[in-house]
Length: 167
Image 1 (cartoon, rainbow, N blue to C red):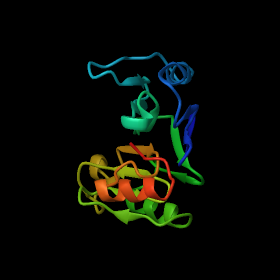
Image 2 (cartoon, one colour; image 1 turned 90 degrees about the vertical axis):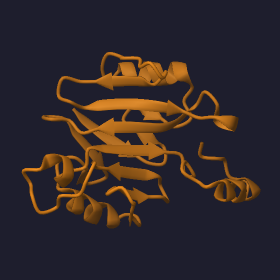
Image 3 (cartoon, rainbow, N blue to C red; image 1 turned 60 degrees about the vertical axis):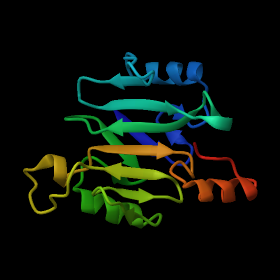
Image 4 (spheres, rainbow, N blue to C red; image 1 turned 135 degrees about the vertical axis):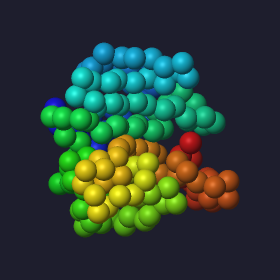
């Protein structure tokens, strides 16, 4: 399966802003649902590919505000434009995404393209050892509404500018 990331709109069949019923139906096109204890809707395929959605609060209550995709162990490919986000080493992924949009490093060994809100995560950086797959490759990617991680001041400025909040 090829799963396409389309920030700031969605990922695969999922779209930011969907209500819970729409998200459930879209996830079921990927695979069988596995509801979690915290109410998150998720799909986990035998290949290791996982997809979940998070729902907003405030004005976006009950609407999808984030979609997270986890690295498959085999077969499935997750792409942002021309970049295979889990099949290439993390630093190559960052370089490829930077051809399209600004990407900044996070404190936790991840990277974020805030303009689109595309966030890449790995538990630690190990860029010199391909055998250490958890640090050499990204393990998850999050597509969210722009402003998803705004500070309160940034959220207030976004609202004052007439933009929707990202939460």
